[in-house]
Length: 129
Image (cartoon, rainbow, N blue to C red; front, side, top):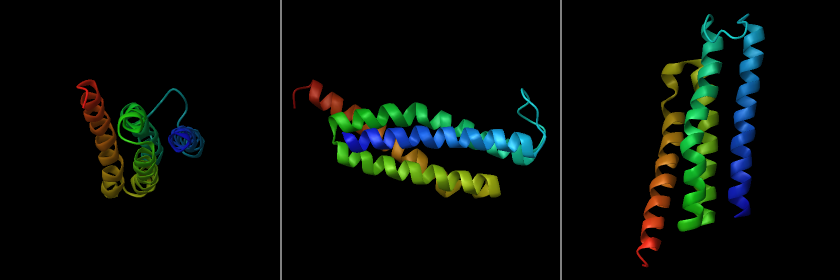
């Protein structure tokens, strides 16, 4: 379970880092709070951060459900793919949003695997199998 806890903490640190990048971009591109639009490069940073939040809502519960009902080593490994996918997504999206596909796949696919695997594992256990 320690590896799952580490992946969880890294996902949250990554989210905080993306938020710091939004703050930096706000200053660099002159987008004053509370505005979230006004400069294309700022908006790219903002979308990376916001999309990461959207994914974390699925990723974190899925990670823990999968670790409990399927296996923590597998959960941590799949979670690591998610973390790498977020980095690839962020770099690609900031450079050219049209190139974010690989990063998105490496983010969404682990989320689905973790969530559905955890659900199936919980159902399996609930049925006494």
